[in-house]
Length: 501
Image 1 (cartoon, rainbow, N blue to C red):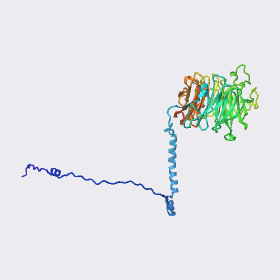
Image 2: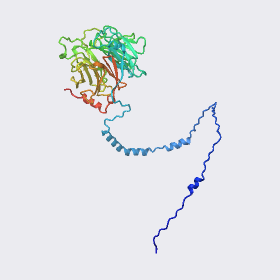
Image 3: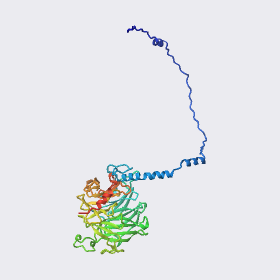
Image 4: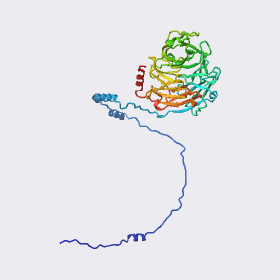
């Protein structure tokens, strides 16, 4: 009935394209030239006006009503949550998940770099050495003293004290901001702890001098002069001693190889007068270590001193005989000292520690533990001592030559630095190694000794070191030496409680 079929296709030709193209015409037009002109105007007067909505008492009342607190409901909620919160806090307290992590917003310094190389041409021309360095109380100015520690006519040779302000724009490393001419070698300098313009210095002649760097004409404001109280040997260290009763007022302490430790007070006539004094004599040294020909009242040369930051009466001294002594300013017994003076000299020694193999050149009390101190000397060793036992806790052989200076870090309990006769500055971190330095910096060319170094208490990332070439280098320490670890103080306590062999 139905079948498939195919119908033939039909084709219709499209004519719209040809018809459209045939009807297109190209035309154009252009307007006449348009005239333009520029003009400016400015008002001659101006006026400011302001408006402020008046306070609405109704709005304030509405706000107070909206801010109503349901104190009873809040108290009920806190009581219900108390046990859970305390439980979680205790869990976090016992957790060790964040041990070793500290938030530090300062820039991280990964390496130790030399920021400045400071020197004074005239001092170098005389082949003078840097004998001491000191930072002022702001941490921005570094001072150095020039002298000679090896040979030369010390009594008549001219020397200098120089200062550089490291924050000054346009700092010239070869031209100090201040130069003070001194007629005798300056063996040590120390800035006043609260008055940044005052510098004290100890001379080879035995004198003490205090300069005020703010005075342009004559900077000398106090000096001991040459009297019966003056040291008879070179002064190797000066310290400012704050007086608790007089705020920022300080007395001046000096140590010398004549065996005397003297405390000076300022007089109105520009003199430093002796207030009290101590003497280290052979009587205070263990009998087995005394020279056979030494009498009990024979003076023993003092080379260095460091006060405890935990007890202002306690200090440690280093001696030419190789010993270190724990001493006290509260001592009352008189020393058997033959030399005269205006003030009786007392015997300060309380305990003698196991000696070095030669003279002790530097001691440093820990700023983080009341019983720990460091010493170094001509045997090239650093000793870590507890003030409670005579034998050292640690002995480190750092150099085949002398070690001239050792200092604890002011911010890291386990970090200290040492200056060697081989021209190196050694940085130790007892948390990482108790046997060798973490970093050794080559300070002086030709193996000339590094005689002194000081950390900057205000900017703990800076370390200044002076050497035998007459140069002071300011090192920028890496963050490893300036950021205290979470358990570092505990490690120091553990170290202090160890019993020496």
